Amino acid sequence: MQMSEFFDDLSESVASVPQGELLAVTVLAILIGWIGTMMVRRRVALGRLVSTASTLILGIVLVVVVLQLSHIDPRFAMAVGGSEQTVEGGETRVSLSNDGHFWLEASINGEPAAFLVDTGATLTAISQETADRAGLEGRSGIGTIRLETANGPIAASLTEVEELSFGNISANNVDAVIAPNLGRTNVIGMNVLSRLASWRVEGDTMILVPEAGDRDNSLE
Image (cartoon, rainbow, N blue to C red):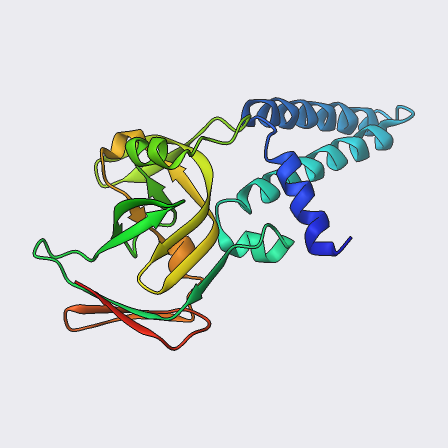
């Protein structure tokens, strides 16, 4: 088994660990560490062993958190060799819409949907309506995460999109969030854009360039 496959299997396993349990284990480890410190100060046997156990538990919790973050942030995914999320195809040009935003007509797991390209969004977000049509569900065991938006914090569930295509570009195994409070809006965030070879805005046109391919496609 390759190292990337090992970390992929490991991250999938720990991703299901509820955040509430991680918090409880962290508090317990801190308490054990405090007890161990008191034992060492009083020169009680096994005091250092208890302190070491506390440090080890906190280290394990940190690893679990990092592996869970690998599903959210591509930088963590690349660091730990997480699931391979790919973006490939040919150059795609997107014209500025009348509302001053860049919109894409995309296909998510074969279902058509409009997406707003938002360079200020860390994650790709999918409305509940689009998620239902595409057969997407939140990852079990993780619960919801808190997202900060212009209208305040909202709760969202982590999911994975098998295929997200727009223009000549196809993104596979994309981590995303299902955000019911966003209404019908779908957003392509930086976890997709950062995997392109480049992206830029020239006048009223956004140019998306993946790692491979030389075809050109304009989206009006």
